[in-house]
Image (cartoon, rainbow over all chains, first blue to last red; front, side, top):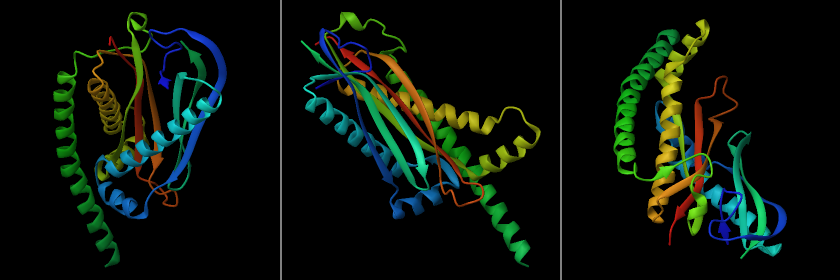
Length: 104
Length: 151
C-alpha cells in the first residue's frame, strides 16, 4: 500500500478513484502515566508518555484507514490528512483520512 | 496558618518552574539547533516541489507533546491581564513545531529520502485535567509529509 500526502503517487499513474477512506481511534490516557505527566507539568517540557500514546493512536488510525482502502480494492491512498481532537477529559481522538486509488 | 502554607507551596512551585523550566528550554533549543544542522540537507516544502522527478514516495510523520511549566503559566496569566504578546507561550509553540519537523525529517532520513514535500503542520491542545479550574496547558504538534527517494 502506497501512502502519500500528495494528490498523486510519485512514479506511478492513478487509474481509478475509489473515494474517501478514513480511520480513527479514541484513546484515553493511562492513569499511571497521567500522574507522572502531572508532575512533569511543573517543570514543563516534553511529555514523552503522551507523545508515545498519540503516536500509537495515529498508527492505529492509519492501519484502519489502510484496511478500509484494501477492502475497497485500492493499492494506494493519496492526499492523506491527520486530525486530533480532545473530546473528553483524558481522551483524544486521532483521525486519518485520504482518497483511495488504484495506481499502476 | 493555612494561607501561609499555600503561599509557600505557590512560591516553591514558581521557583521550580522558573529554574527547571528555563534549563529545560535552553537544553531543548540547543538540541534543536544541533538536529536541524544535521538534517539541513533534507529539503522540505509545503507544496508539491519536485515530486514528479522521483520514483517513490512514502508518508512520514513526526510528533511531540509539549507542556508549559508553572512559571510560564503564571507569567501568561499575568500578561493576559494587560494583553499583548505572551512570549512564554510563543517560545513553547515554536519549540514544539520545530521538534515535530525535526522528527519528521529523522524518519525521512531513516528511509533514505532526500526531500519531504507537501508538509502539513497540525496543532491540538490537550488540557491536562478538565475538572480543574485552569487546566495546565499542553499541546500536540504533528508534522507530516511525503518523503521522496529516487530508488
